[in-house]
Length: 296
Image 1 (cartoon, rainbow, N blue to C red):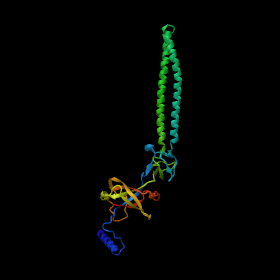
Image 2 (tube, rainbow, N blue to C red; image 1 turned 135 degrees about the vertical axis):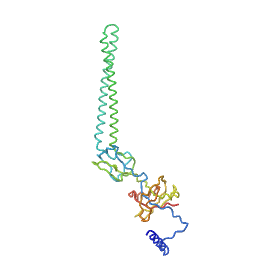
Image 3 (cartoon, helix red, strand yellow; image 1 turned 180 degrees about the vertical axis):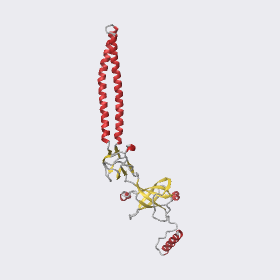
Image 4 (cartoon, rainbow, N blue to C red; image 1 turned 30 degrees about the vertical axis):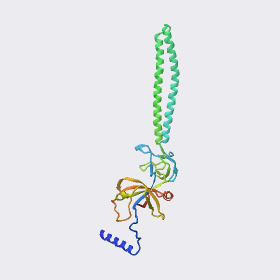
C-alpha cells in the first residue's frame, strides 16, 4: 500500500509538470533549506512566580492586566501574607528602639556608678570609707557594664530579626525582572499561585523565529544567512536572518501536516531575527507555527 501511494504521487507530480500546472525550477536555482518554525520573543517568554518556597502563596493584589506594559522592577503583585510580614518588620524596629532606650538609661547609671566607685576607692585609701562599701560601689559599676553589654547583644539580635523580616517581606512582593508586555495571567487575587506561576511576560519589541532544522541540513546553515518566513493566513512574506545555532539534537516538536512526514526526524533549533516590520504584525502570534526557507 505504501509503494502504491508513492507511485501515485510520482505520476501525479509528473502529470502536473507535463501539463504546465507546476512551476519548473532551473537546475542551478538555489532552493535553500526548508523547515518549520515558531514565533518567539527575543527575550523568550518569562514565567513569573512567587518566592514563597514549596508551600506556595495566595495572591492578595495583582496590578497589571494582560497586554499592559511594565518596566523592570515594577511591582506586579503582593501575596496574601504581605501585611503580616510588614507588621513583623515594624515589631522588630520597635524592639530595637526600646532596647536602645534602655542602653541610654543604663549608660547614665554606668557614668554615675563609675564616679561613685572612683570616689570610694580614693576614700578607702584614707580609711574614710569601708572596704565593704567600696566593694558595693565596684559591684554596681561592673553590673552596669554587664547590663549594657547584654542590651547591645539583644539589639544585635533584634536587628537580625528585622533583617529576616525584611527578607520575608521581599518574598511577598513580586517584581518584573525585565521591561516588557504581560501576555498571560495565571492567577488572580484570592487564588493560589500554582505550578504555572503568576503570569507570563516578554519583550515584544523584537521577535525571533525558532526553526527546527533537520540535523542532516545543519552543515549548510551559517550565522548571517537570510531566510523567508511564511505565516499561514498572511499574504506577505517576512524576512529574517540566522542569529544563533543550537547545540542540542532532539526530536522535532512541531508537527508537519504532511501524512508522509517522518515523525522521528532529529532536529537542531536555529534562531532567526525577524525584520522590524514583522513585529507589529506578529506580536500577537507568539508560538505561531510558520514555514521558512533559509537561503544558501
